[in-house]
Image 1 (cartoon, one colour):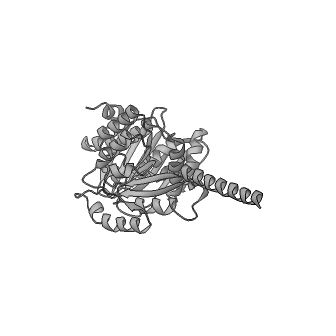
Image 2 (cartoon, rainbow, N blue to C red):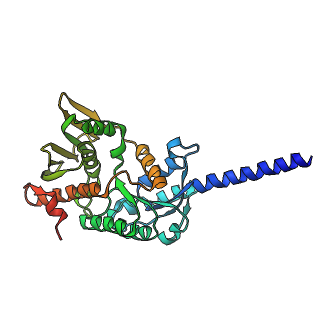
Length: 326
């Protein structure tokens, strides 16, 4: 009897220790900014029961609402979205400082890119890895400062649109890596908001797609703007040409017209958040960003240079000129 009792106690202790180890391995994620529908979508995917195997080992446990009073997309939605997050059993906290005491990783979801730099500073200072949802910031100068602060504190981050990891885009990226693509046209909706540079607000999705397919290395661009559409044509350092078409009038959607060595192909993009969330969760475990800060800065420079070209009536603008601007 004593032997059986000892064995039972041993098994119980082992089970508790095993459970504790698994709990310790779970990444506790905190959300900053609940005025974006992404906060809802991300929470539903990551906290799903059961979650996808690729998202296992992570859980959103706390959230700070934030909000921007001068953006309707924030004020009109934040109360309802905060309630939805609370109803999922995620703790709503009064400040970023409180949030950081409860989590191992952070996702900044604020719809307003202008607040991202301010919100990320205490996260970097705490040494907590962070994913910054699009747009990375509200200006190129802020983006450069964010990257510099990440390097200074040694805290990793990455930022992107979810379209970067959609299956259709990844397939084209592989074609380019194999040397089979000579150029492309990427398109997406391109609604704007007066608080942000034109392409930051929604055009980022198509621009991110363009850079995912083409890779970094754009040296200059020209922009044509009319009421219903933007067309931004970039020249890459190897001579390839890539174009972003931002749609405001007519049929809206996401897609790529890829030009190859042997064929041209139109690829509609099926949008999904989950492939990107898999990369986010993987990043939180490894602390290794899947995208370099330099590539993200190039994307921000592309969108910034597009506004400069607009103001110059469509003249060519180099990305270097905006990156080096004071």
